Image (tube, rainbow, N blue to C red; front, side, top):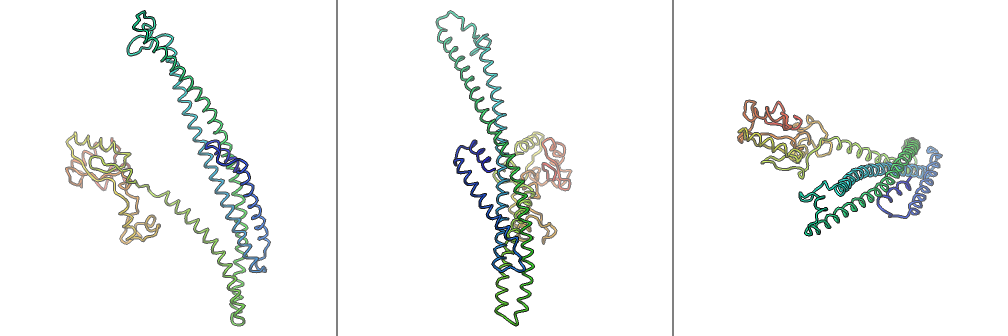
Length: 404
């Protein structure tokens, strides 16, 4: 599988490693994986209740190592699929661009050929046929330049078509190879998921056995404590090491799960505008995507004798500071804790359309629009919709792209 993806990348980016080096690397990795799988299989044969401390420790290390390896190989396979699918998309886009350009060049060739044959096109308003057939000696140089221009342009266009055809063949080959790599990658990823599931099941079996042994041995140590303190201390020392191995793996999994949840939460959080995305339109800061319509709205209002101003984009930095002060400093407290759980209640960052640069609190003649009878509100109510703005009913001054 790796060699298929590697071959695809070589086609797109040029040779970085020789193919035999890539194949050898994959062989070495497969050998390592085979050894770890054999060690894990041996680990499953260990009877934790009867085995020595060293045997149990080695069994835990072996199965944990195999799970780590399988997780790594699955991540590689999934990344390989994503890379191959990206290459397919890039190739498809380039194929489409080539087809468009070839059509344009062909049309240009047809126009040049038709002009050369019929003389229907003029140069600076002069008919080509009249120029070519003229007996006027003063026109000789122009006739020669025209013929050279027409011939050169045709030759350049034909050369471009040939070059585009050659590139199309190359890109098509790249696309086919990337498609094959994506198919192979998905098969490999599915295989890896199965192996990882098997390794995790084996890990669970060993960990459960080690946990049972741990409880038994610690209970034995407690019983021995009054009779043989040294023996009890040795048992506790060994079993604490077993417990450390179990906790380490559990902590690693908990950290991975926390990172996954954090990534999901971050992805689901409302987007906020970056300062680099914000522009100023007649004194109002807004997201660049609505700058044009905001300018048109303000100009239209002015033309009707309505002087509008206002405040648009607000950074979420201050809101984050308020959440840290009122809710706590953890990521959960800042971003996800319900507003009602804070003291005093405080909205989460990203909840305001102002933070996206997509809302404006309008003013009329420099004053806030606090009532629906305000001339500024009445003009906005009649006209803002055609510029993409909707009012938040509870706030006459607040208008945004979605009404929130």
